[in-house]
Length: 323
Image 1 (cartoon, rainbow, N blue to C red):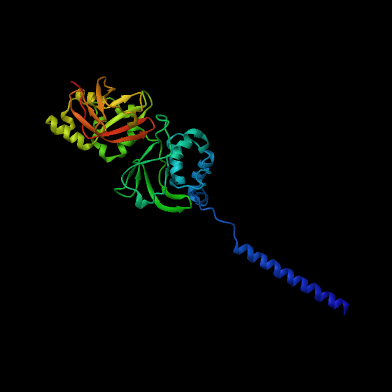
Image 2: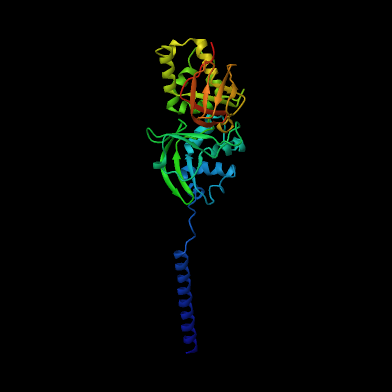
């Protein structure tokens, strides 16, 4: 009887232990580890963003995008990074200088939460910086005429992935640090300017304004409408009616070499010496305006479009040197 009693007691203990263990399991299942829904957390769980996560880790940016705040991140896919590395002569991510990698990644990050419905054609400020300015962060041109295209090279393929600290838009190309030429090509309001800069009889303006020799540059960029008005003023029907020397001198007159001149530093009656050699005058009493060598007045209608090698201010009228 004692043995039977002992067996019964042991059986009861086993049942109690089993029930307790089962309850403990149930508690664990009902209280799972919290899921990290930050931008970093979501990217880490997304297979096609694994190279991005490796890049963020190498650039010491994972914590930045893991903390509280509000960020919009344009996240390149693995294929986008592979293409970027190949096109820039890197065999692997480890070959990209960390300083450059960090700025490239920050060029994909905008402060605030911007869903696709909040994006419109125009410029955003990223968190990235180029060598031209220590204070003015790089500009990102958003074109929403057909989907969402960034700096003319990268398309949003998967929008609006909501994170606890912002939003992710997956893109199909890495957005490199933009040059003056990058911004000129990206903005459809500058197509005539691009045609002028790249006309066959002109100096290699595209090469000059893409590079760092003589940089930083400040470019006063006329819109398509500004060029249209110039043609009317000159009685011309197209850019081809403008002589080689006149066009070259006019284009150089819109460029200042060796200075990243921000709008905040413009002063009234400021004389500006251009890449062409002649000067023009800036006035600021009634909005920022330029008076050229022929006393013609142009209004600066947009300012501080920052590139890695300079800054662009937009003009509503082509300015002309003395001929």
